[in-house]
Amino acid sequence: MTIEEKIQASETRIFKAVFPNTTNHYDTLFGGTAMHMMDEVAFITATRFSRQRMVTVSSDRIDFKRPIPAGTIVELIGTVSHLGNTSMKVRVDIYVEQMYSETREKAVSGEFSFVAIDEHKKPTAIIK
Image 1 (cartoon, helix red, strand yellow):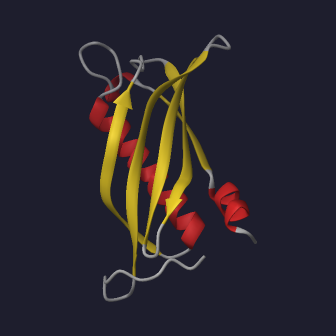
Image 2 (cartoon, helix red, strand yellow; image 1 turned 135 degrees about the horizontal axis):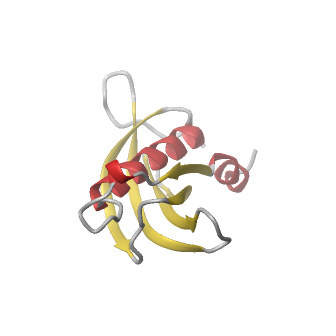
């Protein structure tokens, strides 16, 4: 399998409903909750690509372009965006959909950096 095919095969899509217990006093999704969901999707994507132990080492710029209201559906899409020797970057976009219409727009995007580690928790080469 080529690198491009592995990237495509590891793309991760998760849907979630935004319930009131995840929102702030403006009835929009907490930013920290969005970042938590993004890191989880990024971790799954990195692991699906490498099939190795992966740990988050940083999150790059995260842009909150649109508020995510309670009572909507979000889709998180994780894609490997850069490969290094022991590290990779995963881009995660969050799209928000109204429950009762076809409206869909990008709300949040960001990148997360991961490092592959061995059984001694030391960086190890990503098997490409």
